Length: 245
Image 1 (cartoon, helix red, strand yellow):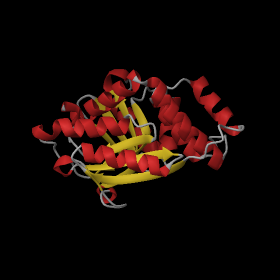
Image 2 (cartoon, rainbow, N blue to C red; image 1 turned 180 degrees about the vertical axis):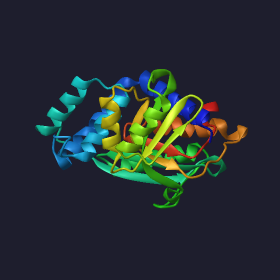
Image 3 (spheres, rainbow, N blue to C red; image 1 turned 135 degrees about the horizontal axis):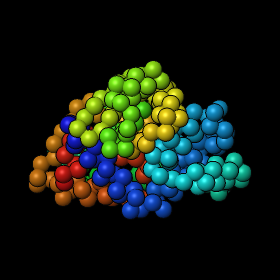
């Protein structure tokens, strides 16, 4: 997939999030609550929380909202116990799809995810059926229009901070890290006051597939159902032309 297509996909996703900020913030707040419950409220001692804070900031979640979420979770919270569940399957044209959910009702979530796959002409599979086609990586994307730093200086900054790779594309810089070094690289860029279009731990496809024109409507329906589900946190796929759908 070209850098242009990928960056267009990122902008497509951010536009959706911006249009539904309340729902996006609620989902991230839920992740914060689980991270605090499992590892404490100090991001310096809780790497999972630190990673989620980075994700929250790249989604334009205000700092005071993040702080309130942490404080609430460190107190009594809402008394609801959430757990992470991952679903895997195929969309039309064999598009590989991974769904990460955070739920207090596994039966409800499983039924909703299964229905979304079915209505999108896809099939929900077993654990591991597509995850081997993805790599879990930290991913930081910078819009070139937001960056004044010299390209070589930016590359050296990220590599010295622990990044695995630095790629230059038409509209953006793509930085990948291991999950373990993501927080360090993010902090380095934040300290340099660089604007990040996206910053999160992600599942990055190793190979890509193209959705055919006759399956566009079904795939869009499947993605809309999944992304609008309150229990679904993230949806990853290897469709290279989804932003064009």
